[in-house]
Image (tube, rainbow, N blue to C red; front, side, top):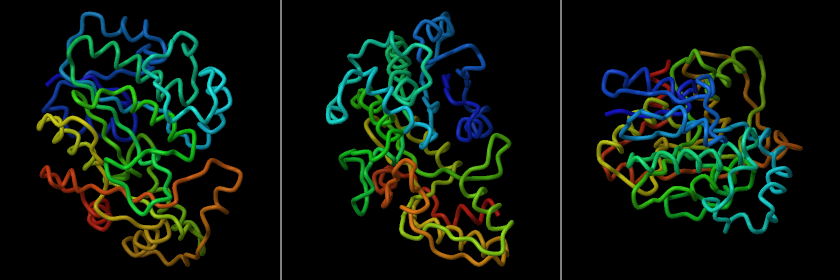
Length: 306
């Protein structure tokens, strides 16, 4: 299968190429190749004469705090109030004012619209990689049918991107806190926690937030599984266990034989003055399991990377 892959140089994209380069013909699409997804012309120029069966859209602005700084400018360019966001139809927006912009909405929503509009003309299947941050984190757990209500601008921009996708023919995959083997691209949150714990005698980590860490290889192979089974709609491709950052750190400490004392800190204190974070980000993956793909628990994933 011929796959057009955005975000090929990121944590998941680079691993996708490592694991599946023999199975699929993968065509990377990135800024380093002269493509700006906020500029439809640059996408069309790059894709001219190329054929492909599926588009996997991993590229995104994922800096949560940096995205929050974009909020005022994005709302101004959208020309709406914040109260209108959840009902906004981004698919009807004029993309011209966003050309060259690096804001969260420009990249995560308008960029998605540009890529979707162009590639769907070819009949290719479109897979959009979204995030658990589309939810408020105020409920106990989240299924595919749960109603998005982001508490931060990054999550809102990704939700606006979701609204571009036709769920009857294409696929939205929501992932959560990816981690995996040591990457040459950058360190994921597990390895950052490992280095923090290993470098100090005592640390304090968040104990009142729950997240769902997801093994990166499961993300890659899960995408491939869903593609093979021609699944459309929304699927939560998330790990099979949820923990607080402190609990995750205790597991890392034990796995690597570290002696650091780990104390408690509160989410609101750690992120004071920064973008809000979902408090309960428990992603249910029952739909994926029922299809026949079972992601690893954090303990299973940690055993592998150890």
